[in-house]
Image (tube, rainbow, N blue to C red; front, side):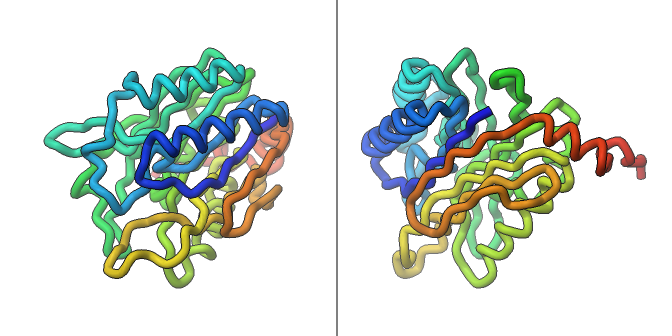
Amino acid sequence: MRTALAQISSSDDPAANLDLVAAEVEHAARAGARLLVLPEATMCRFGVPLGPVAEPVDGPWAARLTSLADAAGITVVAGAFSPGAGGRVRNTLLVRGAGVHADYDKIHLYDAFSFVESDGVEPGAAPVVVDVDGVGVGFATCYDLRFPGLFTALADRGAQVVVVAASWGAGPGKVEQWDLLSRARALDCTSFVVACGQADPGPLPEGSTAPLGVGHSRVVGPLGEVVAELGAEPGRLVVDLDPARVEGARSTLPVLANRRPL
């Protein structure tokens, strides 16, 4: 399954960000991709109030994304914000196009490194796996990467590829943690991990702790090897993912089958 990653840098303007999405959909389709992954917060970057930009998952922003994906004939994953309960929003991955219509709400909220995501975001509760051209694709968002149980749960539900959309927070050692965690999670679930983050926008505004991105999007193989990766700046990857490699990894390293109840 040919998969494209678009490491963009979102602004606080959802309409302008849709223009970025349109360009990336066109590029991915020309490259023959069947799946395009964009980062968390594609709709709107962190660091601004999210309530005013949040829309229902069938709202105008999502409808335009769906139209772009359907016209190109590919499945597109993009980070957005949808209304939650009690004035909070949900950190939602929209998965649209080529007969796929799903949403994943981020389960693990980033209450860490001096940022409190749960102040304004309501957590999701359910893992999500969809079928893209006969390949099981599961979803995780940013801080989810630190929780191996989600990745094994996705594998149990049929995921051979786990998409991780992120707006990873900058700081000492954070790129190294992104590298370590993406490779570890691939080993945990013996699946491809397709981790697409926001590009590094440069220094944070004074006093801000918002996670705006560090780049370094990558594809990790089911035995933990980095297949391809980007640097900090905006960029693109196109990689062919062979499900037979997942089958081979799970035969060689049957950690999922060897688990024992504790």
